[in-house]
Length: 353
Image 1 (cartoon, rainbow, N blue to C red):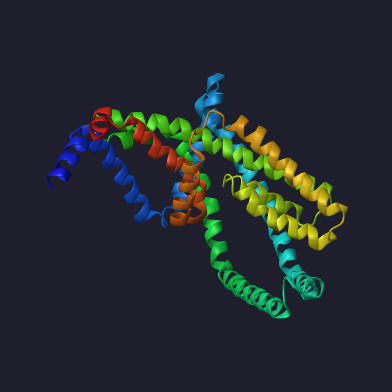
Image 2 (cartoon, rainbow, N blue to C red):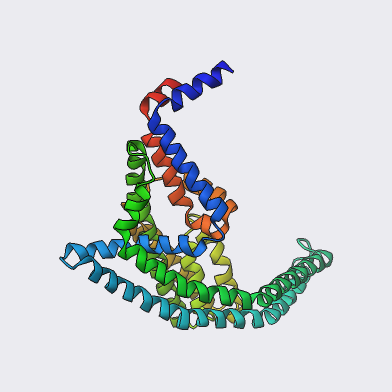
């Protein structure tokens, strides 16, 4: 008991530490308790945070803040309009086409499986082939039922999406326009003496801002280049596969390997083991090499500097807790933890060592 008491005294005797932990706990409670209800609020806050950089850049040229906000907001609305009325329908169309093609793809896969015992009788038997085929059929039925459930709930989801499309732009605009007033109001509830919390926030703000902006730009560039490349190679579902490749950059070291499977399968069912199949794989490999060795270092050179083990651990932990959003924000959250460790009073750490 004395050991625990001494540990608490060493680490929490500093008032700044207590204030920092209290603010972190308050933020965590708000996210956990109000996360589902406040999704459009938090999403708008993130978007406004990202748009603040171009607003500041325009402000440095001498443009009044309100004019800069209006210009950036107009560009944001234009991109939102293009995405919702052109890009999303195109992706939905290609997903629908892929689902319609699945039965024929599964049939071809079963024929290929049935031929394996004749070609390689020592490696695989007919019983094993039937077991694999039954497993594939059961999985297809399960996924079909899941899609049916999603389609039945699509009306409610569409209504919610329309509400978000109206509500979020309004929130984004006022977050940008009244940023200073909102920050002053929030700071009025915080303790006057919060040096440690401010230090952590400055470090996290710099790192997370660079990371999120760089990562979104990387996703868009990889998506665009991959889609154009697949389209030029006449690969089916080029936009959908390019979108998946773009999203794969969210998961370092793993995403590229995972997305290789659908790209290879679509190319195989379209051409078999012909030249076009290998052209697609070679083009995909070149895109991944350029992204990993040129684009990502260029865009994220000033962003987070975490060990690969820490990145993978953060993705596993936060992705398991919050799903896709956890994967997207895993590295920023890991950066927050790293900033707290760096800013923690040296006396407390040295005493433990």
